[in-house]
Image (tube, rainbow, N blue to C red):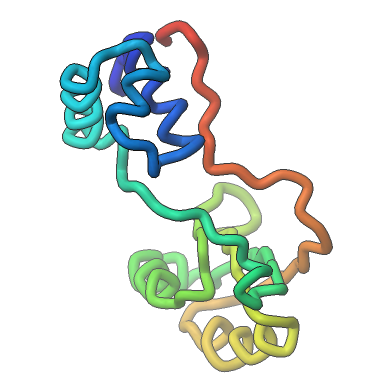
Length: 158
């Protein structure tokens, strides 16, 4: 764990809200001059706190209207090959997030597709053909109540 001081917390909070800000704009918002702000950003990148900067795209605006959560249970043989299953999942652009779980389900996947028909094709042509799968339970999200990439940062250190 990296201990962040108050300036670094402010920098991270601001970058989560808008990563397109210039260093000068960011420095003004957090109360630093540009050079010390840039050095802190550089350190946060090197330490792996800042993993990258991306544009957040509205999936519906580009035609990805189906949002599906799939719970995958592997059979005993499949569990012995978690790495193989994980690598296959990483290769599917439709899968946005994949988590290994503890409990009755082995994986939780967050998947997008243009529509339910496209998901059905993905399901039958790719996902269900992976070796070691015992069961897949798909749940279609009807509406989005909250979606954020912004992590909660307290004002004080840990």
